[in-house]
Image (cartoon, rainbow over all chains, first blue to last red):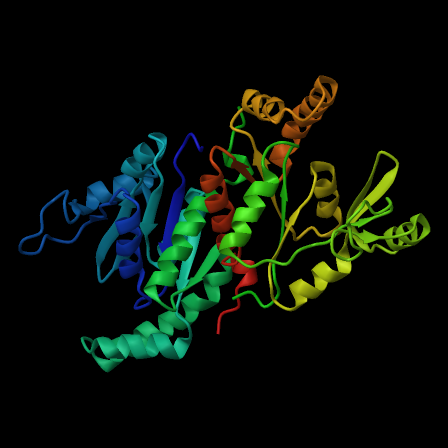
Length: 194
Length: 194
């Protein structure tokens, strides 16, 4: 019904299950893959244009200045960003886009694309997020503690997003995300009557 | 997730299929039945409190003055209205309500309950609505013409509603209404994080 595709952003704290939910949403609905740009060096086996768009710091900086990213940030001395052009092409072709973006980046998208529909994936409780992060068993206690501190702050930002989906079970969260995507296509501002 | 139920209003021009869609939505989701109040005399077989709340004109008038109706209107010299109290009880109990209301009444609900989520059911095209109304074969041509004139006006009001669902097929329309109900429960303003 919408002539142009709708831009959806899925965000939430580290460990909440964004990747799993997005993977399952894709199993129900074919969706465009966004490939991030980064200034870090490729690791063994990583291909340019497949895993990342690898670019020089100066190229990244220029692209950022031209508004070429929907969001970008620096982590551990490397820049990462979501290139806007491929997303806009997809939307122009009438196809919806669902991007998985960290909370700070998702906040930036609101400024650059105020029409984006932003979904915050939240844990059933903070204690449950703690259990999930510890349960991974892959991180040092200090790393886990830092992530939990960040998550605590990020959870206070949830009300600024359009939707909050509680990840009680992956099945329910996926169903909620799909319902949001279907409902948003019916928003009266997006439907033209014949 | 919502503590209080959500009030949904389904509206659309005569002949668009509101009743059929609502019946199918109910088959997927148990929902409260709203019983309209009316000042007209009961017909054979009609029971008070089952088909309608039959009431004297003075009682109706007083209730309307006290804000006891979510919407009310006069047709052919009789008053009809949607009593607010049973709807509010249902919402307080944490259950969603989906009301089927004529377009003019649905416009009134917005003033009285601005938080209501209003869905406009539209035909795939005006010509299709024409075919459906004529196809019923139960009305005089003048009656059909009057309904089409009203429908033409009502369709111009569609953008004032929150959602527009095109009734291409009953199955698709029902799926859209259910998605809207599920998505609205995830609106960040309705979700409290633990």
